Length: 278
Image (tube, helix red, strand yellow):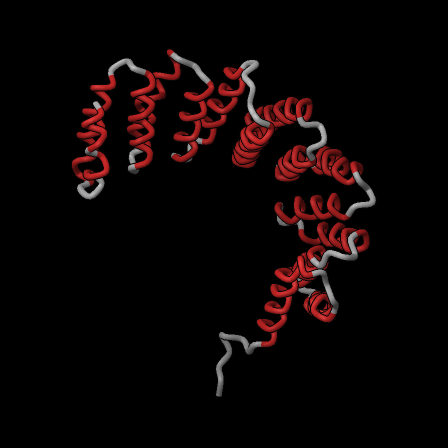
């Protein structure tokens, strides 16, 4: 078994040999779960995800562990099979039970579940869409019970609801991001970003404007407001905001933003690359 696995790096230079070597390794792995998983991971690493999926998909039915569901979910996601991926990622959470995991892991995994559910909701209609939204909201509630102060939860759920046209319910989640700290520009910036992510730039401008008012020492909301104005065709107004940023003294920590703004200004001064120079 180990000898066959050791041939895989060499076989990468001869792709035609890879399927036979993987098949041999899988046969030698037998019913050893760890070995089968190792072969599946190698298959993924060497560009044969379908082979890897074929190994672990039946295996997870016999051994429904958190690790296996996560692995199968990731393979399915890599193949563009979001519905299958979501089912396995949800099953991984259920299989974990009382297993201790870090808060960072919880945020990554539940954030991924909500994101995939949003993708499915956008693609589907009727009862299937409603089911995808319901699943996302359910996992959001479970996440909030563990990580109550995390604004990312309401941001993700708000974006999902915006994407399916439920503006009223979306605002219920997004407004809570602001309500957590109404005197901070961060909540307004989060809401503005959520609207922009759905292509609703005109609605985002007001929130960028409020973020600017509340955070006078950070040029980032100003830059984002300027970009939104320019995207809406209000070029002169946007350029004026960029000029204001470039003309002010900011803390050194914002040098990267100021450099980006100055680059935008210089780029705007250049002649149109598509124009004819006589």
